[in-house]
Image (cartoon, rainbow, N blue to C red; front, side, top):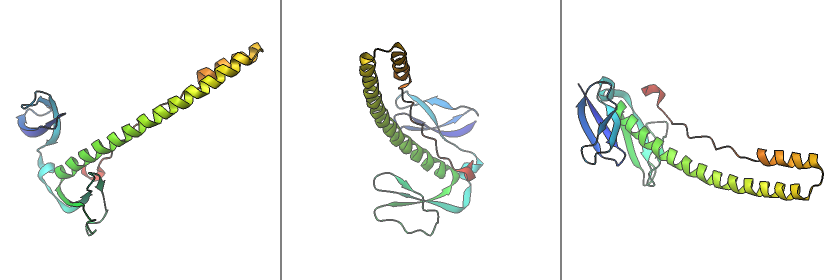
Length: 164
């Protein structure tokens, strides 16, 4: 049995002793499925030689200065992460926020792309309707089928190579 911390989609955190390999449990507060937030093993509790410095900005975004001697920006919260588990927790929050931003960008892109596609197809239909040559009409049909946009690339999760 090992001690693990789980978090459900609502945000409740539940700490339980479970069998090794257990990845989900039922949240004791709301009944939703909760996934592993961290696993208590030696690497989690071990202190790193140097702290990882992260600034949490007032808007909730993160800044990674690259040096532990960096000055804290005005209004930012200085996080000196000294345990592997702390770094993983911040990275999870960072990835969740960035993925949400990318999803919004993708939705905006798809709305715009759909509008362009509809306009292009309408133009091609109009031109095809005015054409008398059967070969030209066939080319317009072919262009109408090709006038489709692909989805934008998906967000790729950031991870901490040194900690993996």
